[in-house]
Image (cartoon, rainbow, N blue to C red; front, side, top):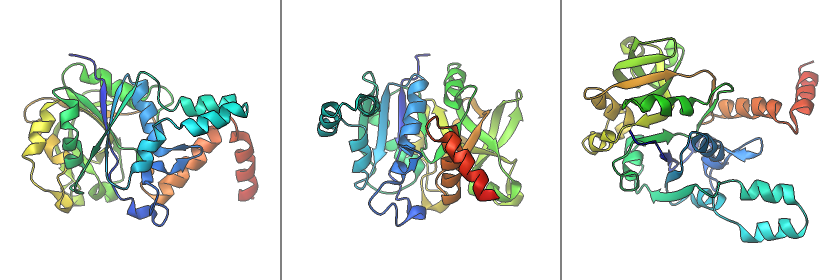
Length: 289
């Protein structure tokens, strides 16, 4: 198996849950402390050995491309004013060995369709897929690193976590066979099942490492839940042909597609931040009194 070097970032969604903040600003550019959501996802991918980043965008997402591009005027002014630390921070947003590609999703036809839009760049290779809305904090070992290692066997891998049974109808839910404390083999997967039909309370979250066969299956995947082409439906077909594993990661997922999840991420990442963590902790204690 050749190493996994490419990742897809589906970033074409409209972010309606954050209006009016996302009227002119992509939701993936909303900050958690001092970095936009998409940068956290990119850093996670780069740490896992990814060198080619494919952003599936829409006409309203130019800010994402600008963020990962050079800004000569800003860099010049920072250099002239002697702000070397900030200059290095800006220049280091994307390492020099990493390439960025941008593909338009012409219609909002779902996550599966967004992934399919990247096929020509990915080619016949396994690929990582990261949803920036799902921030995953894994202090011991990043979830994607482990998933890339697991996929070296030729399997596809999805990140999973336990959710309350009353919320399974909001996720893709797996029918699992437990292999170890953290690894499950998928017998099936259902997108947003009714609570009574859910095979477990283990849901797929926004990290995938998928073998190239997924692209051919997506081409023939009919519209599913919400009238969209669901990646989950294509994965359900894929597991009939090859192993698909679920990795129950050690860490915390923040649903930054929701206001509450985004606020939780800001607070907890803020508390871990070297510059403001201590002062924020003091403030929160004062606030709670």
